[in-house]
Amino acid sequence: MSFDSSFNFYILIDTNAILGSQICFNVSISTKALEVNYYNNFLTQCFSVVGSYDPNDKSVYPASTLDISGDRWLTYTIRFQNTGTADAQHIYITDTLDLSLDFSTIALLSYSHQPILNFESSGILKFQYPNINLPDSNTNEPASHGYVQYKIRAKDSLTIGGIIENTANIFFDFNSPVITNTTNNTIINCSIPPTIITASICNGEAFYINGALYYIEGIYEQKLITRFGCDSIIELHLTVSSILNTASQSSEFLQTTAIGSAYQWINCATNISISGATNSTYQPTQSGEYAVVVTYGTCIDTSNCYKINLISSEVIFQTWYNSTSNQIQQHRKFAKAIKVFCD
Image (tube, rainbow, N blue to C red; front, side, top):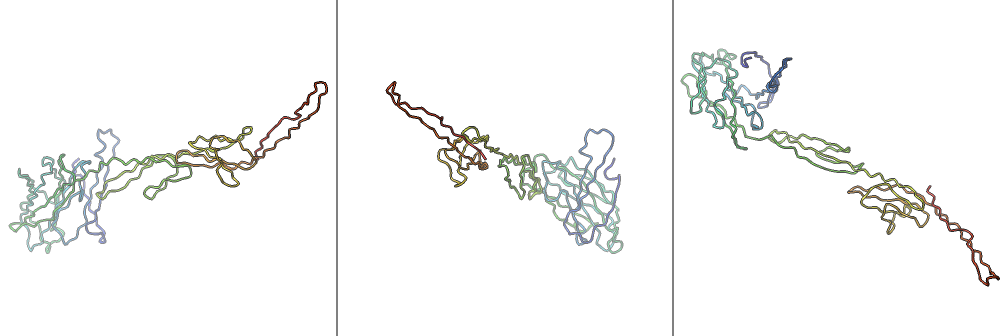
């Protein structure tokens, strides 16, 4: 399949299109046959919107930058127009290639008129159109236009921040050359490793990053665009800590099943911490409502209040004189008992 002869299509651009903006085409092919390389089944080609005020110009894709983490191909398009008053019999274009380009990779892609392509060892690419007889724009405006497109790959040894420049000279017959604009591609590297953020929150809290709130444990990804158009990935590894602070009654004690790094029992009536009550268990000394505050890492959880009623039975002693032994004796009638009730 030949890239430049398989098919062509023409479209009309909206007259409200902004000059300098990009119009991109995404092309893909698919086949049922097995392939060795599927990556060459996709092509994206962008063109800059230009106006009729600049009929002789040069553009490059990708525009402005070149990502060395990609395939490093640059596609150049040179447009020309005869704005004189007679046919241009012969036209040729010289293009001095930047030394950052690999001259051995030049490939002609497309053209309006078949050129004769020559490359000089000094790095000058020459497109010749002998006997083109290109009409002038006053006689036949649509036919007065022409273009040529080629691609070339940048070298592997490029310096980040360097610039690849390119300017063409268009010669109409024996006139002085029309010098096009200069294209610039700043060398960048979009192979940016993701920024990994590891964070932990307590149950019911949220983690905030770049305008987004995250409540559930998991791994999240945000994609940001740098000023050069690179994807900058932020990867969030979020854990959510939960404290299952459930208190229960065991004999005369209250206890919590929560595993924490610190405990503090409080009196719910006053919301005051109970001095010395800093274990996972607590034995109330009086009736009341109590709760436990459990700390685990940065998370703090307070249990519900538990109502405790302490009821003590009386201890009755009987005392009498034993004349036989000549002693005063004492008998405890009821043993002391404490009952704890939880409402």
